[in-house]
Image (cartoon, rainbow, N blue to C red; front, side, top):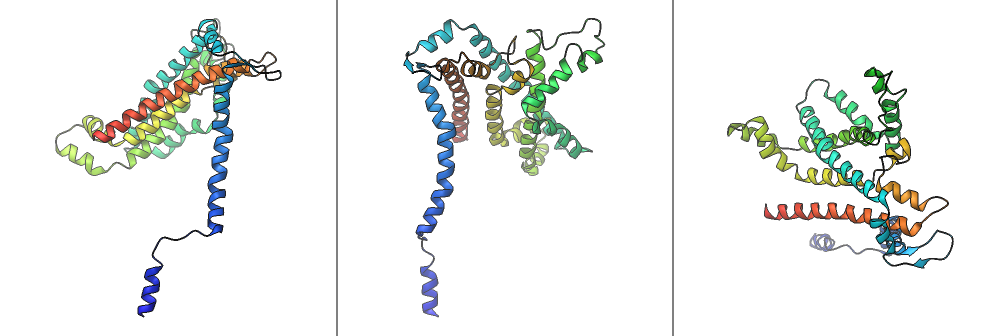
Length: 304
């Protein structure tokens, strides 16, 4: 018996990996890392390098320094329209769609009647691609055969929701928010389900109203979900492409930075260096928003 106990006690030490274990770990970890480098970080670094060159994708590459960035900021008017639309996209999703998704999550968390049906209905747009959402937007906002003009009875003098540059961006933002709201709702609903009911009861005992309990007790506990939602909102706003490209190829008031990247890189007169400069600007804006927000959240967690 003592010998058996000694042997079992000796087995409790750190396990040594066999060559086979190391090979399996290398394959399981190495393949994802190589794919990450090859498909994401490799093209990212290449785009940064190409942004300082002039290249049409066929001939030789010529180093031009910062000329692409100078031309982008001074001699390329579509850039500023696209930057404005991207910021408008971010503001609309962050200040309208996200709070509305939170409101829907709070209402569904109260276990109202047919809550499962409402969850499925509101989440259904999320399973659709943005390209499909763009085609649906065409069916709704089309000038001649659109559902919205038919409902408003604007058959004699129909409103050109998608052709008017002062209106089409808002119509497309509504379609994008329709999809984004369902995504945000599910994330917040999952967070609300994990909140300890005792916290709400304690707040009610202290005399807090339902609204006060939510903003002072429930919402602070949703900080991890808030971080995820904020990052997703920024990414969705800055990577938007499919929906505007499906409507009018991102032109006539629907210019976005992602569309400008595609227009300059793909085509007969491709300017890969110039398009890469736009992509680097988009990358910088994305990282600026995300890193700043994450640093602030980490500081708040350290203070608490």
